[in-house]
Amino acid sequence: MNYEEMISVIENLNNQQQVQKGAIPHGSNLLHQFGKKENGREAMYEEIFNLYLKTRTISYDANHMKAYISNIVERTNNYMNYFWPPVNNPFSHQADFTSSIIPEMLCTIFGNIIHSKGINLEVSAQKDLTIECTFDITNGGQICFKNKRVDVAVVKPCELMFNGSLSELPIPLLAIECKTNLDKNMLSGIEHSVTELKKTFPNCKYYVITECSDFDVKKSNYASSGIDEIYILRRQKRGVIRRKPVLRNPIDMNLIYEIALTLISHIDVMNAEVIDLDTRMKSGKLIGRA
Image 1 (tube, rainbow, N blue to C red):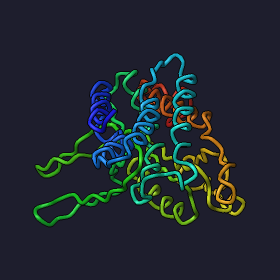
Image 2: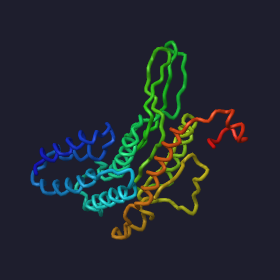
Image 3: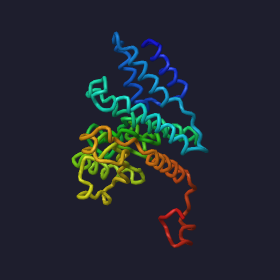
């Protein structure tokens, strides 16, 4: 199969699956690599293409969610193993090639969940979310937005009209930062952004997802931060696999399954009937849903 044929298959797959714009970060990266059409590397690219295609051609069944998650995680692990250890990766590390694999897997899972429920939500990768907005009197009055880019987001598309000017203001249901290796400095920056975002969107779930940890977990406690959960997908520290790459664990399917169930639960809460205050008064609780 030549480069043009591989490009055509992926583009057709995107159209058939009605992939939302920005929800295929790794596929876009792969298409960019195919576009270089490097002579003598067709066989290598076809091998990568075949492994990638297996991650994109899994039937979704909402009634068998765990089996679906198990399947997509297994194929993603197989695909990622092609590029491990790092010396086997034929692409420059500046291309961020492998770091886009997990975000795309999450976008695929989330997109299927949203589509099956038939609700007006969007999933995207590299999404700018508003974490703060200020009102300025200059130019007759305007809003200034401060944005935070996240790796994966599930949002309700909304617009804000102010002083005759229309701005997009997507309301996030779920926001995720994805890292290959997570260190303390990264977490410190994320903590600040999450605090600001949750002032504007207090009901947004915010997860940090990493393959491995690169900080001393015994000396750190992030339970009091705005981060709802930190997932270590390979359940190990970076130092272990740096010393011996063969010891790298696969991505844990159960963690991905938990994340998917959390999204489903959050969608159900969003769609739940709002209980009026008179009814809440009878229960003696005015804020809780029950």
